[in-house]
Image 1 (spheres, rainbow, N blue to C red):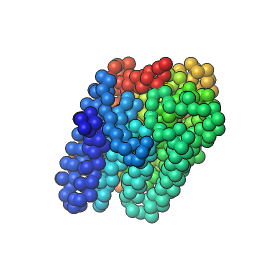
Image 2: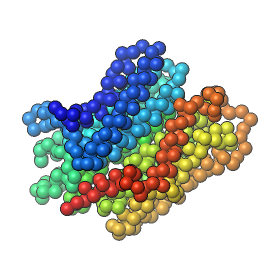
Image 3: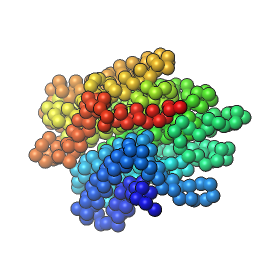
Length: 498
C-alpha cells in the first residue's frame, strides 16, 4: 500500500493507539498518559491538515479491505468527511487540554482518557467511512466507547443515565442495521457517492425505499436527538463537563446529524428524495425539534440541562438545511456542523469552569459570577450570542444561509421557524448573560476552589477562550477562502453539479 492508502488509517490510529496504550498504564503514570493524549491529538491535527491540503488539490486518499464477497471495509477522504474530521481533530485537542485540568486529582483518569481516545477514533472512522457498512461499524463503536464516559462518575444517577443512553442508542442502532441490510438486499453494497446512488432505482421499489429512509432517519435520529428520540440527551448531563462537550460538539449528536446528511445526499440523492416525497417530512421533523428544544431549554434552571435542550434544538439546523434542499440551505446546514460544534463546546467549557471553580451549577446561582470569572463569562457570552444568531458570529452565518435557502426554495414557513427559534434562543440565553454580568454577586459561592493564579487554571481557561475567538473569527472571516463556509460551498457545489 502507498502512503495515500495508509493516511486514512493513520488518522483513525492517531487516537486509537494512544487510547489502547493508556489502558495498560498505571493510574499514577499521569505524565505518560498526558503525553500520549496530547501527542495523539497533535498528530491527528497534522495528519488531517495534510489530508485537507491534498483533497483540495483533488488528491485521493482511500483504503479498502474485502470482508466478504461484495462487501468492503473502506475509508475514503472527501470534502464532507474532512469537514467533520477537521472539527473532531481540532476540538479533541482542545478538549484534551481541558480534560487534563478538569480531572486533576479525580479517580479513574486512566479509564476516562482511554475511552475518550477510543470515542474520537470512532468519530473519525465514521466520518471517513466510504460506505454504509463501514459507517455502521464505527457508529456502533461510538455507542460502546461513549457509555463508559457517561457513567464515569459511578453514581446511581449516572448509571441510570447510562442505561437510558444505551437503551436509546442500541435500539436506534438495531433499526439502522435492519435498514442497511434491507437496502443492500435490494440494490447491493451502498457506497457513498455525491448525488446519491439510488436515482435509477426501479419505480416498484419506491415504497420500500421510503420505509428504509424512515428507518435510517430513526437510527441516526436517536444520536441526532430528533424529537421524540431525544430523551437520553438531557439525562446524560450527569457526565463530567469534558464528556458533555464531547457528546454535544464533537461526537455523538454530530455523528447522527452527519449520518442523516449522508443518507439524504450521498445515498438517496437530493433529487431522488424530492421524487420520493421524503424531504418535506424530514424538514418538518427538524423544525419541530428546533422549536421544542428551545421551549424546553427556557424552563431549565440547571445550566447544563439548559445547554442540553439547546443542543436538541441547534443540531436540527443541520438536518433542516439538508431537508429543505437547495444549494443555499444545504450550505447553511453543513457549515452549522462546524459552527454549532465550536459554539456549543465553548458553552460547556464555561459551564464546567463555573461548576469546578465555584460550585455554580444552577442559573439562579450565577448572580454576578462574571465579576469573579470575567474571562470565562466573556467566552460564554460570545458563544451565547452566536447561538442566538447575532452578527458577526458564526451563528449569524448559519441562519443567514438557512433563511436565504428557504426563500430560494419558497418554503417561507422555514423562515418563520428560524425567527421563532432565534427569539427563543434569546429568551433562554440573554437572562443568563444579564444575571452573570449585571446582578450583585453573593457573599459566598456554593463551593469555591482556588485553581491557579487566575480566575481558574489555565488548562480550563484557555480552551473556551480559543473556541470563543473561533466563534467570532468564523463569522468575521466567513468570506475568505480558508473558512468553513468556503469548504461547505465546495461540498455543495459537488453535490449539486449536473
